[in-house]
Image 1 (cartoon, rainbow, N blue to C red):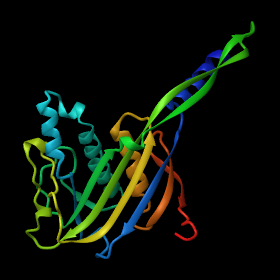
Image 2 (image 1 turned 90 degrees about the horizontal axis):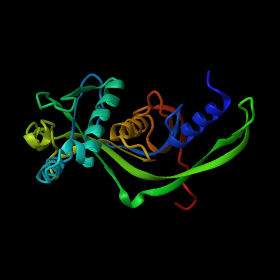
Image 3 (image 1 turned 180 degrees about the vertical axis):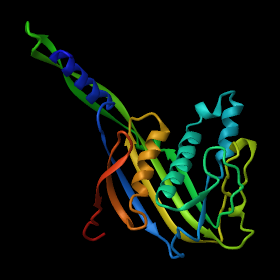
Image 4 (image 1 turned 30 degrees about the vertical axis):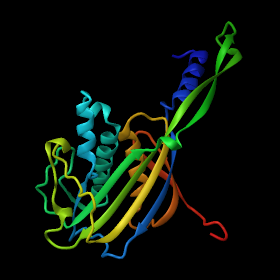
Length: 259
């Protein structure tokens, strides 16, 4: 059994490292419906594709003599955006093809989901977290004095965007997978996609000191796709993080007077 002073130290570490117990995260979301036919669970097949410049970023990382999967944060954020967008759509009951991180382009979609995710260094900021630890205990192990500890953390800002489109024409470039060895067999979007009908666009962002892109995108995509297609407009989405992201409340953004 933990002594009482040991228990207080453990609680202090949990608060400092945000590693123990459920943590609450806030994700601002802006979802907008287009004027195309709504997404169908029976008639639509969706492919999620990577940003057009994904292969170029992988190439640059390799030219530096580095392992692209380890060093390219851009790759990690976008691969996570693809993976969790697919999982959210599947959980909602939609048919998704060419899933996973080495998917190829064998499927035959009629809807394309364009995803992108990146860190915005201009929005990073520092925060100070404090907690207390017992500095003295009595003979029974009960704390009698406390020290306040503090540690600085850098909060990164991560953005995510998804756009659902219906390309016009069977030969539309959006249907071409464009996968190469540099894209690790993932389908890549054309640089300037056009000639499509717009179904939906959703954006979300997260300010966090978490290090894993997969952890971050799991939260953001959960918020953006929550209650799709009913949650259109700007919302504040609050989630618990453990054992997996779970939406606990949603607050619509109220427009300011005169806006």
